[in-house]
Image (cartoon, rainbow, N blue to C red; front, side):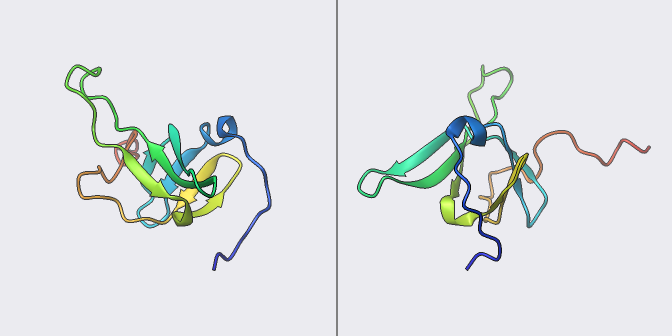
Length: 103
């Protein structure tokens, strides 16, 4: 059972502007690009983050990241915190690293 439950209503436009972060590793996974629905129950099953383009899309894209709705811990004002197992092909950190800014 989730420790913190909120009864907020969000539109997809609200959700797609929130950055998804894995709370286990602190990895910035990206922004939601699509939702998957169960057509029998009309409930959201997954958030889908499209893979990043390789060399401006000329060499295709990385694989998409699927996040089960049950893996979402908190939907905050700016971020969506998730607790999920990333597939091995998924990079551990997306975005700019912070390690070199103090050197």
